[in-house]
Amino acid sequence: MKITALMVLKCNLEGSDPVNLANASDMSHFGYFQRSSVKEFIVFVGRTVAKRNPPGQRQFVQHEAYKVHSYNRNGLCALGFMDDHYPVRSAFSLLNQVLDEYLKSFGESWKTVQSDNAQPWPYLNEALAKFQDPAEADKLFKIQRELDETKILHKTIDSVLERGTREHVIS
Image 1 (tube, helix red, strand yellow):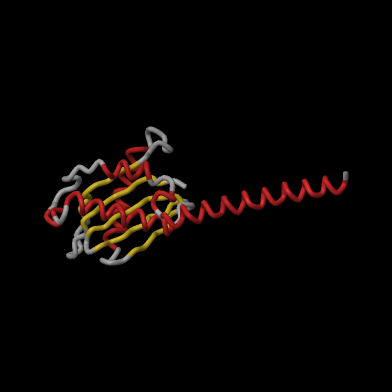
Image 2 (cartoon, rainbow, N blue to C red):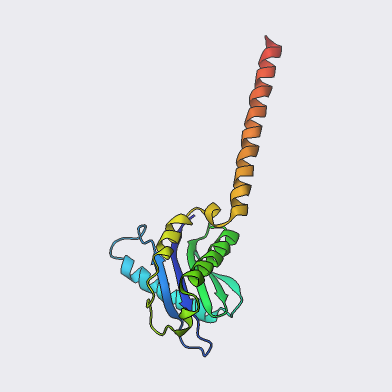
């Protein structure tokens, strides 16, 4: 499960291209010479998906082994480029948290921004690293994973006890 990029864009209602407010990407799994092309592709796809996502909607677009998750909250749009294995619920929870943090940091000032990357925002790089584990984004996912691990541990203990009982009966 891998997040390749996170973006926050201002979606214009009149149909012009969305303004890239902030973005963060992890290009470590791409070759050195591919990285700039991949970044350009991510920005292009991000703008296209954000432009087509109506306000108040959450959606994802599948492209090969990647999913682009998008959440448009009244013209402020968060996007996540994740691999196919990242849970959908965790992805949208992450995008919701990113939008909440953005509004805490910048308030309504994003509405007047006209140029790309006009507001540097280091939190997005931190979020990209932190939320590589889907359990960090979605507490319910974390609880479910812990329950699954507990069930496995319970089965293991039962099988060890059963094996011990069989050995005791045999001897």
